[in-house]
Length: 270
Ligand code: SAH
Image 1 (cartoon, rainbow, N blue to C red):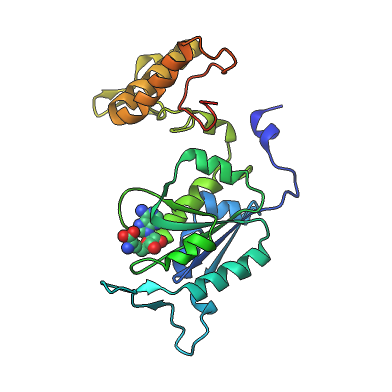
Image 2 (tube, protein in one colour; image 1 turned 60 degrees about the horizontal axis):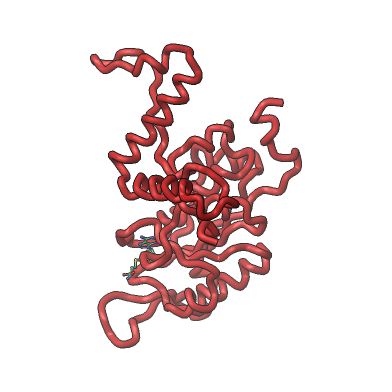
């Protein structure tokens, strides 16, 4: 059986549900209409609902924000419409993980992506805007609060789309070739090896000979070494952690610990 056949989802597998709660649902609808996510929706593997938080306001003016207590610049998103939107979505999407997009959240990474792709209830991604959201939403209504990087966006929509895209491509049946995922950047603690395609020489720059040699063992060795070299160059922080794990593995302290090359994972030091 080929890899893709083995990993193909059952014919009537339920689609993976995402709901994005936002003041700008059209931003989300437009973005998910294209490319791999768009095809995943068309194929019934993904279900993406963009819900307008303003539909859950209760006053005549559909007010979603207010001035901050204690003073300061800008406006803060009011808690009631967001809490009402989360409640309604939890009813429609039982078991969903409710994740708040936030510049002060836990850093989003590939390990989180993998965990969430396996979460049967799917995701509810909540987008802030203006100066952010009343803190009581993070404290009492969301399951998680994540940041996509150490910078401040004007709204959570682009962050939610980043999370959605990264999770969606791991849902079985969304990417054509699931086998390619294993070698990708961040899956094994390294960045991906450099990739090349035709032509063999481009404006005087040649493809490494070994890739055209047909020698699979040599190609694999080149890729392993090139991935490590590129990680050292571009991401010394990741490379240092890989080396730590390797050194740690060589200590005979814990013979039950499985030997592997990669980043420390939760449970490593138990
Ligand atoms: N005053 C806030 C920033 C608000 S930015 C602060 O200093 O932390 C407005 C909204 O954009 C936030 O509510 C959040 O939903 C989103 N956002 C901004 N930066 C983000 C980031 N790095 N990751 C995820 N969401 C972010």
